[in-house]
Image (cartoon, rainbow, N blue to C red; front, side, top):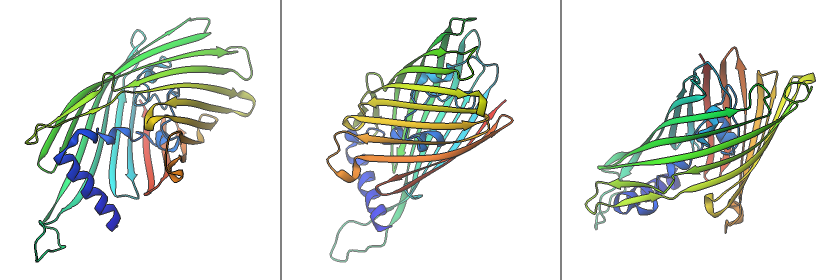
Length: 326
């Protein structure tokens, strides 16, 4: 516990004094329980219960639908030393265009304020403060497909986001843009007992850099540099055993080069399991070269319950999510 408090103190003090390298790290978390368990390797994954646009803005339109999607997630970060919430609402497709609204929030509360050093130094805090980070996203996406042949589809999308961050007595604000593309080719979509889909995706986050300006005395600012990801996936449906298998491999420039792998199995469109891992290619510490996660879910009559877990060097992340199709 002392180690966690010490880390929070150092990080928070650094933000207040010089925010230039903090770069809104809460946006590097993986919204949704599926994202936590699959370690964020979802650049081409989306279905009727998971039209997620946090990872790739195009994924809210990988299929046309006349239903509204509502999702919420609560994450217990680093063995519950921090709270994280995400929510999204995605409206039905209108002329192949779909709109969505997302919200991400992370709170670190109870950070102690210690008195300045003196001969009679006290280890009792003078008070406490919180770190409250928020991001609001507006998503718009579009899909084109060669109906009625159903051989391929191409979707594209963008997230316009604003970042609002308060820590101690300081306030930061910024805005950014994410863009994405997802192209799929369908094999035996109508006739085969085992139809499949091959997808290629590109995701660009913080296009041109997302700058956060702070109201500190020095008017400091920080920039979240652009991240990109390239992904390929294979989605196979086995009708004879009512099963569906999804596997994705990707590369991103996150952490100076990351290779990701995710796998999902779904039975009868009702329940399933998922797992994922990341390999950090340029990590100097062998103990930090890889992280992994996993989870389970149940979908019944349009309502879904999801749970994801991952292991990090300073504790576990747990994520619980609820999803509903109206």
